[in-house]
Length: 85
Image (tube, rainbow, N blue to C red; front, top):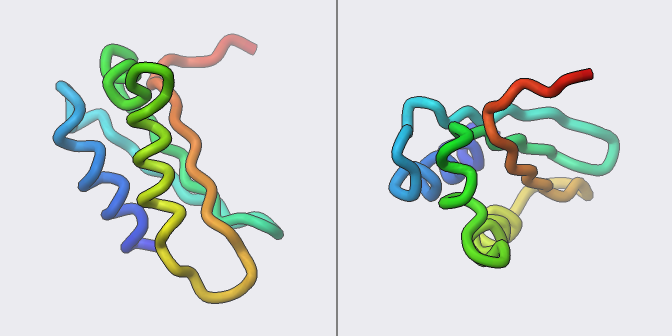
């Protein structure tokens, strides 16, 4: 778990202007090991990239990590804005 968090942080840090705002949360569900990447709202475009190419590349790297057991890794990317409910 910590290795995947470190991998996500290592890949994303050079892409953003505000590396201190990078936050990776982990949640385990019945089917997935879910990682939620949160970045500064000004950096969301850099992390997603044109037509989602950068986000797709990040997901490819993260999904290629071998985990024990039947669970799969899932990565979601969010900006740091508060959601209005």
